[in-house]
Length: 344
Image 1 (cartoon, rainbow, N blue to C red):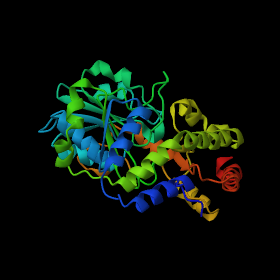
Image 2: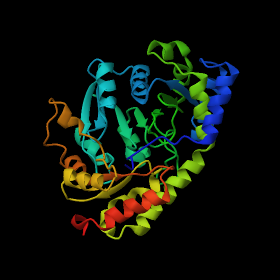
Image 3: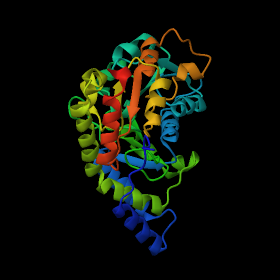
Image 4: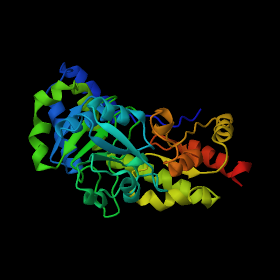
């Protein structure tokens, strides 16, 4: 079976981890600080601190912003539940918005649910597709960039994600473009919050740990990261060139200049279960864009306000794309797409 996603672990990574194991320094040590420093350099963000996960980073950002106790936080319904759970844990009231046809929330989507009680907006660079965060500063509330799928993505102005909002969060889960196995990063360029992010007691208060083994892997991955992105881009451009029915990829081609190609998306109005079964029989795993919309998982949210997200969920198919995908595997995927009668 060609898996839908998998971590990219190279010989360089194995050597880096083995050297750290051989050194005997396997708990939290100086290499964790080194990883944070090189991550700051790569993202051009002034201060980054490792935390347990991307969702924990969201929670911590809300704590630093003193958001909770009934304050409203806007986030898109087209998103994994961990972010919503972090908002609820903070004591804030999550307010879901719809998304545009580019898989991300736009200004109009946020404007429809923005009220005088809105204290923060969480903007998600969904599947690596960058949001133009600057457009949302007109709302004059703090912005948290969710970059968990978007390390290395750039917006339409060529600005790398992560340094535009008041805070940004990243994930290093096993299937992300850069991995340390688990963990995440909380980052800020806002001068008002640099000391908070640098405060080790604040970090410790929510439970945060990283070992030098993880840091060794993270540094090694970051040293190779440009090569990873180039490989993803090559696979994506091969898909674009070789998928015969261009309407399957027209929507994604439109947004692809702003993505790190964390995902490659095709669109079809066919029933997803039928499509997944077809590909599975061909030995290929495919997925929806997200497993489920947040408003469908939580009964307190109305369904009527998220029609575009529901439409996009039904027609988005994510196909395998990762640096270790071989040419033979990609040929098999392209052939399966081009010969599927329901795509003709």
